Amino acid sequence: AVSKRDGCCRRCFLRVSPIILNFHGVGPVPRNIDEGERNCWLEQERFEAVLDLARGQAHVELTFDDGNASDGEIVLPALLRRGLRASFFICSGRLDEPTFLSRAQVREVRAQGMSIGSHGANHRSWRHLAPAELCDELEGSRRVLETVCGIAVDAAACPFGAYDRTVLAGL
Image 1 (tube, rainbow, N blue to C red):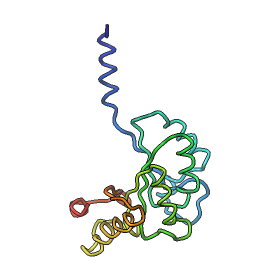
Image 2: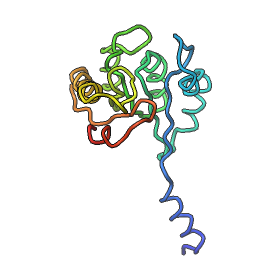
Image 3: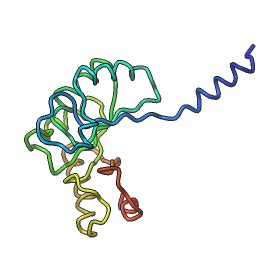
Image 4: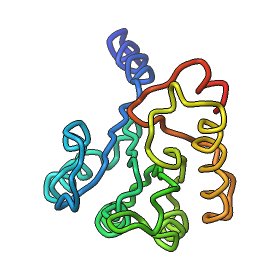
């Protein structure tokens, strides 16, 4: 028999909202970064402790923005050791640049079962861009990532979390 209290707990459990944990990098910070980004960059030990807590929590989603080199060097192996999956939102214009992922690393991240999405071409706020610039940030980046990964890329994360109706229509 299920008590009224058990039924309530079951309903509450089914209504758990997803928790999205967003990271920008792990380990030593390899270059000057904005103060806001520094808050999303973790020491490796702290990051691994967060992953240990997230393991087995179906409502927790892990995302990584920008395509920093640490995504391939530190993050991917840590996720694989724990059997976790994540979404990586990559700035296509930074591919193969120092301190960022190479095209080969992006292919490896994808080959290991991770999701790939766009974070634009050059990590610019998409609001207030001229139409041609917005198209390059949205469509151009998507096409580059699709070529690199060999799959359709249909997810995007807005740089700085900034969007408006024009951005949404472009996505």
